[in-house]
Structure formats: C-alpha cells, structure tokens
Image (cartoon, rainbow, N blue to C red; front, side):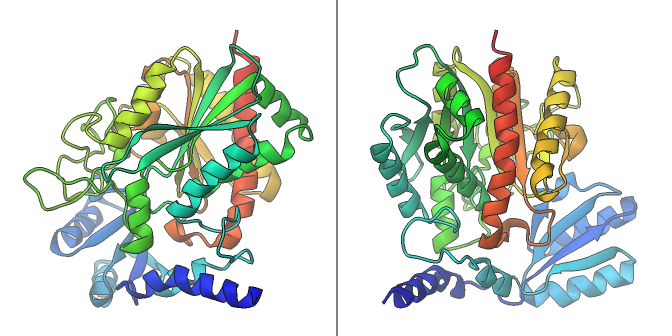
Length: 418
C-alpha cells in the first residue's frame, strides 16, 4: 500500500509537467568575448523567445560574461548553428529540459505529505506553517502579514524562544522568484532545524533564546503555484498590468531602492519588469510594511535566491559601496568559509552590482537603506548544471551548508547588537 501511495504521489507531481512543452528544449551557456558577440545574443532575443537564466535579462549581457539561456525546442538547432557560425564559445547545459524536470523529483522522500527533502507545493507548505506552529508553541508562531494579488494569505513564522522580552530579530525570506524552488525548501529547513535541535545545538539554542527569526517561506505565492500548475519556468508575480497583456512583476525589482534604473525593465513583458511604481505589488507592500513596522527590532535581513552560489550585499542598484563595506565583506567571507567547510561548495561574495550585475529595486538594498545594516542575498546551488531545476537529492546538502552561513551571520549580529 505504502509503495502504491509513493507511486501515486510521484505521478501526481510529474503529471502537470508532462502537459508542458519543455520537451527537447535546450539550455545553452555562452561565454561572450566582445561587443560583437553580445550583439549576436541581443539580436537572437529580438527574433525569438529567449528565457535568460543568468543574468536575468538580455539588457545585462556584457563581454566576458557567462550567459545561460533557454530556447524553444523548434529553435534549438537554429540557435546552435548561429553560435557555431559566429564563433561564440558555447555548450549545452541541459539537452532536454523536460527530461531534466522529470528527473528533478529524485528524492527518496517521495511521499504524499510534507517532507523537508522534497519540493512541496503551496498547499502543503501552507498546512505545514500551521502544523509547525501548533506543535511548537514555545518556539514558533504564525501570522498573516497581507495577501497576494490572487487573494492568498501571506504567512510569516516567528521562530524564537518565547518569554524572553525585548528581543532583536533577523528577517529571512524565500521564494521571491517563483521558479527558484530550492529557496522555499531552505526556509522550511531552517524552521525544522530550529525546532528539532533546540536544546541540543548550543549555537542555535543561544540564537533562539536571544533573537527572534521572522521567516517568510514563500513571498511570491501566486507565482510559485503557477510553476506547479502551468509553467515551471515562471519567475514573476501573477498580477495584471495596465495597457498590457503581459502578466506579472519581478518582486525583486519592485522595491524603492534606485527603482527601475539599472538592471530593471519598464516593459511589462520582460522578466525583470519593475512594476508600475515602487511597492505596486501587494506582496512587496506586505513585506515592506512589516519590516517598517518592526524596524526598531529587525537587525539583519537575509533574502534567499538561486542559482549561482553567491553571497551578496549592497549595493546592487549602484556601484557605490555601503558605509560598512569592510564589515559586510568580512562577514560574507567568514560565512562563505563556514558554508564551504561542509561539502566544499565554493561561493563567491561581494557587493551585488560589482559581483554579478546591476539590479535596481531589490529588497536587500531597500532593507539596508531602511537602516538594517546587515543585509545579504544568498544565491544557492548550483552554478548552472541544473540551474533552477536542482534535483531533490540536493535539497538536504544545500540546506545544511546554507544553515552554517546563516548561523554565522546571526551569531555575528547577536555579538554586535550593542
């Protein structure tokens, strides 16, 4: 019976993927040597549908940059011929995206209920937020901080030992971009570790006694659901845009930090669309309002994204460095060393604009400008072999190593509160 349930669960999970036209779609990586090759990629994206994985948009493509992008199946040979003819250095990262999507569900924990070692749909995550709070009332409480464009409750978990007054807090969010499934998995893992190792792990126990952690498991709930039901590669929200048939805004371009300048688009059809105004999205507004209301207590902001294996800090909307640059760099260096110590996963760190590319309107820059001087963006595994479709078998190691970095940052914040 149990085996049958597992098979039914696996079939249900992959059923929606079978309906999609990802069969034989390819993901290419190109390394562009000069402006001429950059123009080739730009003209390519003008003439056909190109989904940029890294960087997020064709506007960010520069010489000497590694660029990952997805093309439709019927265009893949045409693209490959063009790259060969133009002398562009390239390789095929994913030969058949549908096969890779199906293979993503490779976890041994393939059951119908919630599991920390598989990707859980929103319905399962929402139920889990209620359960984990009900089962651990001394450590976890759940609140609703707003609702999404489609009217769903945005759940926030407060994790920390109750009965300790005047605690400072660290805010952690996941699931800004719908297709980055590994990120909600990390937020769930963090809460699991908090409740399971409290009283056993001395560092985490001290942190939970002394600090509260606000954990927002999925910011872009509507988009996340859409990746399970309609389009696994969806990135933005699901809001309608005035005077456009194109749907959605990039939540991480929708904050009032250099809004809609470098690395953001004012075209609603682009994946980096900044929205009609700062905080135009209900999800952005809910998150920003909560942080504004708790500015006196929130001392660090950590936002979890994928992929690239990076630990970034402000700024991304300008090449100017933050006032405490040396401190942030020192924290990032030590945190990445902690992360690497477990599985030897290599991370790069630095200010966003200089380390990867400029991107205006991001939540980390906004939080920093609110006075939260410890503000970091994680870009989790991997570096492109799987990209947004990291297999479930990598959830556990990814979360374990990331937790080491988060614990380091939290401990640093605790030691430097006063």
